[in-house]
Every structure is written in structure tokens, then in C-alpha cells.
Image 1 (cartoon, rainbow, N blue to C red):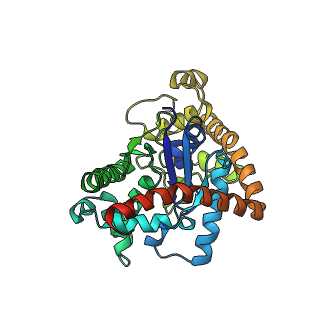
Image 2 (cartoon, one colour):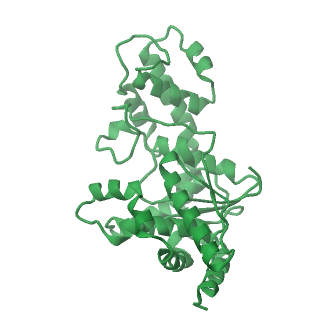
Image 3 (spheres, one colour):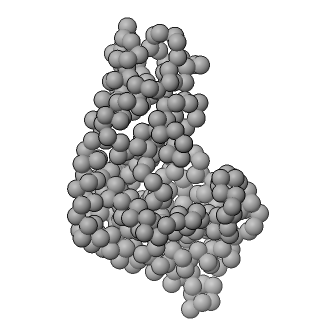
Length: 328
């Protein structure tokens, strides 16, 4: 994949987990090579859940610092906070008027989020996939890196783009979902049948990117395995398979190489090695994060510059759209 326009965004909803890092975030650094990338802290999406304003502002800055820590070069690729580019909201309304209720009714995440936030099932929770479509179409993105659970949102963006182009003439690129080959599915450490998630009430179930090394080691030592007593990657052994997969993902070794390395070893040896491999990978991320976050003036300068550069592209799209629909 060469010379493509790519949009990647993440909500400031808390510190990402190891699963987020393995599944998506570590690929962002690779994607900016040879492509035109935009990286966005999607703080407007966070409003579908009630937020403390001061905490939302701090989390947005914190997430921007983390994106830099993941290896993003903000000189090469604009890094910005979504609400700083007002064209996101402007395009979303036009796209709302070109999206059908039936399409939004079929979005599985609305059902999931409604169940979690039964006391606040707001209109934004229903229509946020249109805002997400606008995020993508605003930059004329060719591809959108997503996990399998987000493919439905890219499909909606495609449908909206095609419908708008058919009605008003060629305006939007029709984006493609892109699931990076480098990645993997990291499962809960306490219930390896479930995906690792920071919303899990048990903090021992997930590794936060900012967890202290001692905490990481302790969590892996407590990780659920089984009573087989031997290290092997086999069906019916989700806890063991999860640890082995994480080790492969952190070290770059194949499963065969890993199994040879731990041939005859005990579970304790494996757990310690997995913890050490995770610490080795995320320690430099943590160091960069705290350095960037502590220089608040420079971080705010980077975000402002990124917003200005993103807005230049975004305004061209909004201007074209507004002219097509008769608003200019």
C-alpha cells in the first residue's frame, strides 16, 4: 500500500491497553511511511457519554502525547484534536441528511452502547457513525485502518459517499477498510475467552500502556492458564495460547520458535518472559509519553499546527459539499 491518504482516530476515553496497541496503535507508525496520514483525537465522539469537561480536556492532551509516543511524527503527519477542526461538525450535518434511519438502526455498536448507558440513550449515540463517516470523508481518505469490529462503520461511510456522489456529482473518494497484517487479538488475562478491554471492572484482566513494570509483572503472574503442566499452543487452552501469542507479538518470533524456546519450561518461566517482553516494548513508549506531556507548551503548539494543516484539507471538502447541496 503506497501513497494513500489515511485517517486514524482514537477517542480520549482512557489509557489504551496492550490489546489496543497490538491490534492497531503500533501500526500507525508504519502506516505513515509512504502515505499521507492524519491522526485525530476524536474528542467529539466522547460526548455520547457524559463527560467532566476538565477531565475530557486533559485526556485529549494525554492521548495526543501518547500518539506521539507510539512513533507518530507530527511534522510528517498532522496530529490534531477533532473539535479544533470545526469542519468535522459542519460536514456531519450534511451527511446526517443523506443517511437513512434504517442504516443507523443496523449498527451493532448502538445496541451495545445503549445497553451500557441505558440512562443516557441520546441522539448522538445513534448518529455518531455519521460523524465518523464525516471524519473519514473530510480528508478524502483512501483507506481506514480498522479492526473487524469497526468494518461496519467504514461500510456506512462508503454507502454515504456513493449515495452523495450519485445525487450531487463526484465529491468524495469511496474509502476502503484496511486491516493491518501486523497485529493480533489479545485476550483478557483473567478470562481469556474474552478480548482484553480497559472497561473490564477487574484491572488484573488488562495491561494498560502506562502500567508500571512491577504491575505488569504481577498481572502476568496472576494470568489464567490451565492445569496441563506443559507449554503448547493447542485448541481448548485459551489462557496458554494468549500468553504465547502475546510473546510472539512482542518479540517478533514465530510460534514454532517460541515453543522451542520454552520446551520443557514451567508456566512461571513463560509468564515472566511474557511480562519482560511487554515491558521492553512499552517502556520507551512510556518514556516518550511523559517527556512530551511534561512540555505542555510544545504539545499544544504541535496540536494547533496539526489542526491548521488538517483544516486546510477539510475546508476544501466542506466548500465543495456546501456548493453541491446549495449552501454556498
